[in-house]
Image 1 (tube, rainbow, N blue to C red):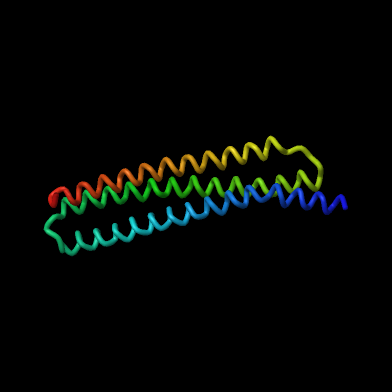
Image 2: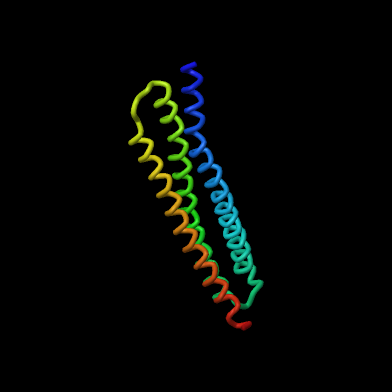
Length: 146
């Protein structure tokens, strides 16, 4: 009976990190999609510049600079959110060790949780910067048409 109770406690305590991983995974998916779009658009612009398809080469080069900057910012955001997933994942074995061996590892678990939340916050900041750059690029692209 004691083993069953310990197992139930472990499963109950593991739900929060698993939910956190699931939610953060969706953010990671959207970030990788944003990165893929910047890469695809960059390749298209490079092709246009190389083939001189457009007469606004300087405009395209500026857009390309913004896209490269966005790609690096998205890389930092993806790295931060991946770090968050790693920290959340490490909470689960700590909880298992606490339940199986009856050791107090709460402080380590709290540190990993705080690091996980810090990763989410950093990723959100980088995402905000990326969105700001996207709007800046959009303004630059449509300014002649407004």
